[in-house]
Length: 428
Image 1 (cartoon, one colour):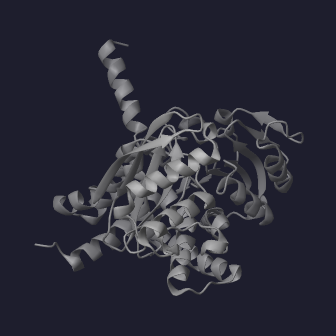
Image 2 (cartoon, helix red, strand yellow; image 1 turned 30 degrees about the vertical axis):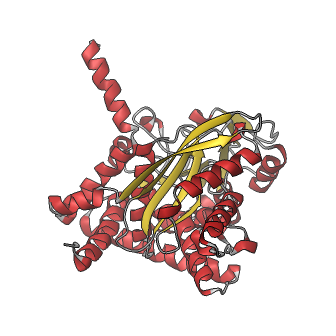
Image 3 (cartoon, one colour; image 1 turned 45 degrees about the vertical axis):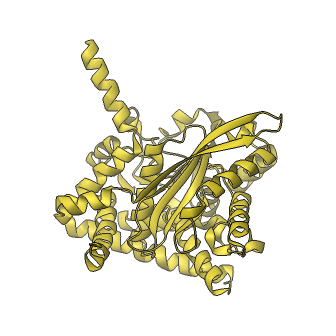
């Protein structure tokens, strides 16, 4: 291979792994089906607001470190922006832009009156104390305070953030506003205005998407062998719920490796081990595999529920499944999508399959605003209704346009945002 060819190949791979470019490519495909003009495409591609902030922190050892944080608000057309905040060492602006845009389409697919946003701080949470994490969270919140608010932008947990993180954000915002503002974030503890069913919501939405997808290809849960990548609030809870529904869960993973039993895992026992030990390593009643090999296990249903760029041009030819339901955001690259579609592998896309979390976040926001809280049964019932309706609408759109479920989800989501844009017009 010549040097020029090698550079081009490297650049092509870098482009494949750029989540914002992947989002843009899928956007353009859907926009072509909707025959959108270039002006509207420019409006919907372009984030409404991007904020980069420096976060100076006094560390436990007395030193000062400066962290970098982002908040991208992609679109306000349908309502306040909504989207998580992640803490990770590899957070970058294009990733946050892509995640913000995906939130716009995700909220639109399930019919929520929100636009999309996303935030992130570049840090390694495992190397930070609780006090350092609190100081980073509060300083980050203070730095983006002017663009937050129940009617502006409502954050939620994401990778390496949780209920406690949201409590710190809510408290910081409330202190600056001189009033308790529970509706400024979702995913909070119950005692601070959180919603019952929120922690399980994304995993439950994935389970519902799996069930509805199986119906379309004529399979039953009890005949379905499942591989779940991930073991957190999406993968772990999703695996537990699938197990309870009668699916045969063969494999689950964490960041260190995966466990596999070709006869099926005792998922509650695996999750109990993980809670007790902090990692899957050492679990006895299973084989242990590197995470790279887990995705290539033969199964009927693959649920990538970890992070972006897991199914790529490097491994797509070794994916052996009939159905993929995306629990994570952006786990399949646009290049890999083409090959999966060519092979007839059905993909239920992230902007539909993992929308359970933002749906119950919306329920939490509603409950905070009216000051009246629902039972978990009501939350789960309304989540079920929302997810089933959205799945049916995406499936009908796929049949109407003769496209994949992913393209159909984008068509449906973008068309709804365009409709609002045309009704509202442009401020002169």
